Image 1 (tube, rainbow, N blue to C red):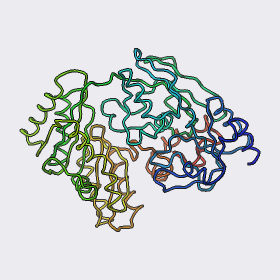
Image 2: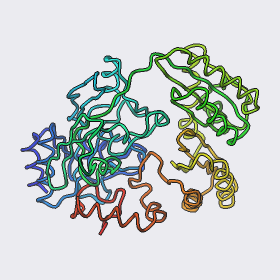
Image 3: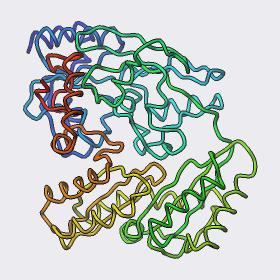
Image 4: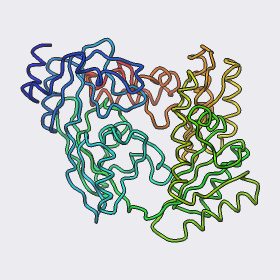
Length: 462
């Protein structure tokens, strides 16, 4: 490996090849600190050309590559193997915003650029990059593309996939494919870029992207409601679409348990009376009349019995207070004790039935369990977290939840990806025909299984 390390130093500069355990620690451990890898080295190229040379060098030595951005993923998809022997290719030095076109509403940006930095820059042009995730202060563009990141803006703008117009990718053999087109329409053949969006670095390394921007809304309105049950929440979602229209940008479902945890462990308080569930609803637009539309929706919901209580935020401080309840749920859960996290999606119309059936299945295995459930009702994504309260039935609970997800034709990973954490369950629940198709794609683009092995697909995909 010494010869490879020396060659990587010649390509990127010796200072950009890290070999000491203390230097590599943050690159070798996942965000949850649950998986710790043992890489040969960490290399930090500064250009697409350097990335290509690094890939070619690793290929000659038959050393696997783990592409890495901000290392903020929740599935250990960018973490090297604990068994050792791979090279982490960190893209943090590819961080340039190459161009912003406010007329065409596009931004061309390198993979290592921080999401928040890009968002702040395009906002100076009156534009918005509509990706809203908790880790945007450290997550990188390459990472959000490679994991098809979701977040709170999916309801209105879609997943990251819907925002990507073009990609620049380094393939497993070191070939650079330049597809950085700033086009809304390009019907000239296979849309190959879609293969790399959400592939978690298993097919190649995304080095740059062209992303679609939208006009920056001039105003927003936030409401917080309590509802008797999930069926009422679903009906209220339909009512909100009717009365608020396409300005509706966020529709978050939060369980009473979630708010109770935040009140107990963080000290925040709900501004409204409790129901069975809570809803955080937000709309944004550049047009007038938004506040009136939200007030009308709230009034109608209370009149029809869809809501128990509710408030429309009257100030920025109230908006912040409402969002703080949502944003501190994960922290409160961690303070409460051990939990099993599930990032699932279910058809909205089946969500109430799913919650009943999944709850019964888990309780049958772990009677002392509680449920911390919250997520993005508008796109069917729930963070279905099981508070174990001393129970040890980890694998059985995971299987029970995912079995009900499959029964309702949902997904065991709505937005966090498969990575290492969910690979076993992906293999168990994904239909064999889809697995064969995934393996066939992998075989064509990375026949030697050099790109991020052991993530998304088994180590031997053939």
